[in-house]
Length: 119
Length: 514
Image 1 (cartoon, each protein chain N blue to C red):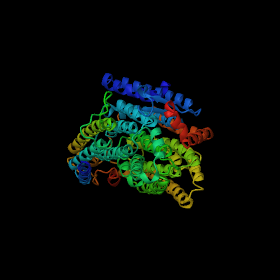
Image 2: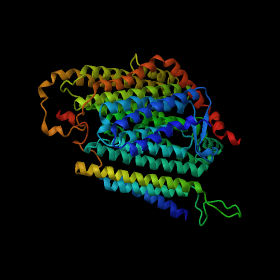
Image 3: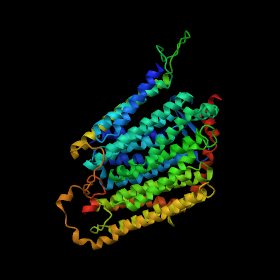
Image 4: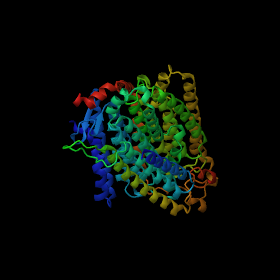
């Protein structure tokens, strides 16, 4: 179980980093999504892995429970990363539509240094 | 409980949705409410600074949940001072954005501005590490909107880079917090400080990883050397009044470094054992060097000012990396100075860009060129650290604080040569833009092909008088900071003493159950 979760986090992070280093926006956004999935699983695991245990205390009998705090943290993290992915998709889309290419790096003409040459 | 503490967060948090939902079609009302909100924030900031200056640490329990279980806001001298700085910075910038017409070039400028203020104030006030992450996100989300305000292909492209970089930074922040939580089982800063001190040094490998990851996150925000690449392109392509507001965002990173590495992983905590200071000092010196080289190498005024921001972060972090009281007092004074000076230079750069394309090369003379040149001169003196403005006092304090440091010779050499190179770079830019412009009238006929490549659209109906008033407001701030350097330094010294006695902070937050 631990090995499975740990390797899942590792593989997703590695794949995400690989994709982030691409030059076009689409793979970069995919990579960012993969990394946020990895961090969500990682956060979930910080409360230790407990199978079939509720995240609430039971007043009446002494049953195992799992730490609820990481679950709350994961919910926050999911909401934020989901929203942020939507934002970057929108900005990337309008950048693509207004400049007709989806390279994430700035080319020489894009840079604000450029007006100096032809002024 | 003292409800003033939550007011700097609640006021913009109410105002921003009000502006976006009720006033979205009424630009004049938006402007009135936005300025009123910032003035209100300034009033609140003055009140809480007056309350905090006595030295009590006050705690605000959200939802009345006691400390390690609920989220707390903590008001001490440092957080009050930073909120005050935010409000002082926001007022001239919002006035400038209104009078220069920047707020009409896209939608929702004022509500995003208020959300940004909410995030910044929240980050300064919170006493919970995960809540710090949430406020970082609030200010970042608002900054994404502000950064791409007004649109344009280049700005949007720079915006994609900026968002991608910061998303990665946020993910790293979560990894860091997860690691720390897995070891300590808490995310309340005061509680973390207690637990970290209790962990035996041989069991702390994972915690050290968490501490260093957290430092990396704050260094991304503060634009420290190997992680500074996002800053020049983002700031130079953002609307420049927004870039002026972003001067406080790098300071959020600085604040977080100071808070976390004095309170939780303090200089005498066995876990990190000076690890942070050593790395940070080298990185800060290199940041300063790269920043000054960038000033000399830039061919565009906005990019040059962005490198000025990086250089001033370098100076600031040199002082912080020593982690002692004298150096921290100097650093806090320098925070105030460098935020105002950087913002001033961004506004001056915008005044130039409203009138020409902003390239550092001889171009046609611009309207009000003399006044703008004078403002550029004042801003340059402040940023380079020459007398008589507060930059001189700030740099002197930093140099004095590093006198006893282990690598004092190298640090002094970099700061002094860096100041010299900054002076040369700014003087070169100023003389090319403002003086040589009179020789350049022969090549001023508009070239229809290049017209559309200019990243900023021409200014709609500028109101020069009021625009200059806003810029002079920042100059006034610098002058006051110089005149009242004594009281200001007294306050920052007291702040530093408070920072390096974390016991008071811990007992104030956790006091209820002990």
